[in-house]
Length: 163
Image (cartoon, helix red, strand yellow):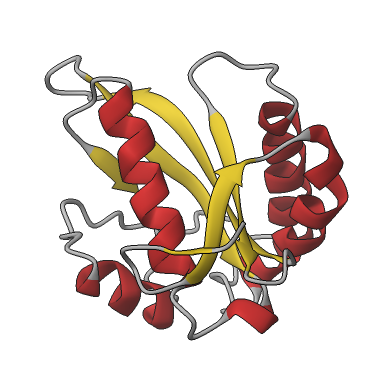
């Protein structure tokens, strides 16, 4: 049954199942569409991300979750992959968005915001005070979305290729 979420998305967000595997894995290449840094191997990034989300989709790692967004017609239009991390400075566990991917058909429809709201609810339900994420500096579109949703930059990671 479709529902309009707080984010304005006309659909629903639900826990992923093994039946969502092909859909979820098919979206992973979108993570590198923005153009990762030249020293990153896009194919290798895609392979690792696909392996991790697939492993956690099948419930093989405690403290993880995958949710799928479906539009009003029941078509899957995106997913969020969540993990539990520990803060370096405080030792406090918190939720972390490992992956958030919206299918082309879901862009501009509030799918990402609905998935992020589900991620925040998951983290709150686990007693976490924080929900974090990483985003590549070049991924300006995603950075704008996260800023609009109230996320603030905390660290800037600098990399020098030594090869």
